[in-house]
Length: 320
Length: 311
Figure (cartoon, rainbow over the protein chains, first blue to last red):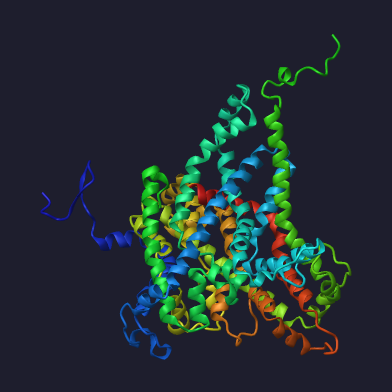
């Protein structure tokens, strides 16, 4: 009867889609409840987006974004040909790979080990202590490292000297920093990840474990054949999402540890630190935003790819 | 006949299984590894505390040690003698944390509830609108120019308060918490004729207490540890910086601290202790977190578990 008014079929009934105005009115309270968040993300995330145009200009601060001269892809060209972008990508990706692989191995290891601990008190205390570094700011982390490695007064420096060794000036040794940064990152994040995996272990069906025990499976066998296989989906999915973020660096950690110590940049400069420095120190807004835009766009497609993988494995876990 | 205390354990407790060699190895390795790593996690903190109570000359002589060879509270006395900066930093940080956490919690829980309502036709669209911002961003430069040029918030505490109010991740986390609340609560409210906001405020919010605690703590921790937006948007024009940014400045510009302390009552002939001053500032800036940590840790664990197991 209804004359080609938008008819909607949902398989069972055909009904008229109510006019937009009425739907809005019916949901006005719920919409209003979402409004602050909508405004927030509009202002702080969507409003800056057109500003990415800076990457294609020779930005002059007093002229603003839209009046600065347009120079096409020159900023990108410079970043590619100078090798700067290549260096940043290499560092960012290699660090993240090290963080992801070593981090997950350690987190899994400690989660499994914690699960084997019988004493409740020991389990609770150690879990708390391991989780503690997650709570402190990267500013303090830099001080902790300084405390250990500072040439004149550092704890490790003195230890080496007391043992009769020669302590190099670590803050002038670019080749040492990949190890230091990876170690510090593991120190800070292992407790956090362990909590996640430990929760996954404790939520698994204990009847399987009991059955295995009664059947006489020893500790190694229980871990090998029950704990690890049960954790596999969680590991794979967390791993894929981590890969999705492979272009995103941990700015706070790198910037606080390295700062403006340019001797170390070759091995420690990641996308975020470069973007920050070239904007705040050298006021090169155009190149800074070109690197940032490159990171956003490529990173976006990497996340899409990772999500597609996750969707294939288990659509319940996919982001969208 | 006799009470056989040596009866095999599994006779009495069939589920208790004897320990074979591999179990023993695992157990030993476990206690050593876990114990050692936990120690590594806390020792650096201890070293900062120990160094802050050391005399500057002892550090010059022996470096940072696990126990001060000469105990001194001089650095703390110096900080107390001109406490303006420290007190100002505390006040700024606490105000930001309290105001930001309250506003953030209110908005996040409201949004999380609305987006979890199955009868809200726009929930998927709005969720995607929010989530998309974590997938793609314009980058730092346009954001910086937005704050500095468009909103004109340089040297304003709003430039720190606002960006930390919420994140897509926290809204998703809140949604997951709301999911666990029985749908009947909303239904019963509707039958009683309560409006959506009233249902949220009077019926749902009280049962969201654990979620509020968890997400509130994440927000508060974010404000407490904030130094990033401060370093972007607060220039030397701002007299009082948030604690961590104050610490950042002390670490990186001890010289400036020297001047600020020297400006007060310290005679210039006494050498100013730069190392111990850094450590004492760090202890004061981080102390409250470490002290509160044992009480709040379980809420963070709850958040990580809810947030990571299901996205």
